[in-house]
Length: 73
Image (cartoon, rainbow, N blue to C red; front, top):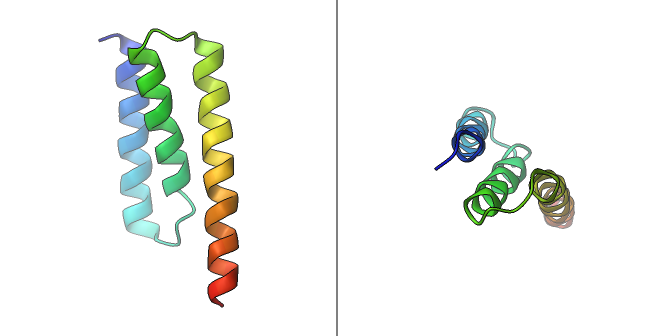
C-alpha cells in the first residue's frame, strides 16, 4: 500500500477519534469520506478522484445527518 493510502486511513482514524470525543455527528461524515478516498487509492484511482470523493461523500452525508437531526428535534 502506498503512503497516500495510509494517509487517508490515518485521517479517517483521527476523525473518528475526534468524533468519539466531541459527539454530535459532525466529524463522522468526514471520516467516512476519508475511508472512501482510501478505498479509491487502493483501487489506484487518481488523486483528483480521491479528493472529489472525499468532499462529495462527506458533504452529502453531513447534510443528510443534519437533516435527520433537525427532524428529530
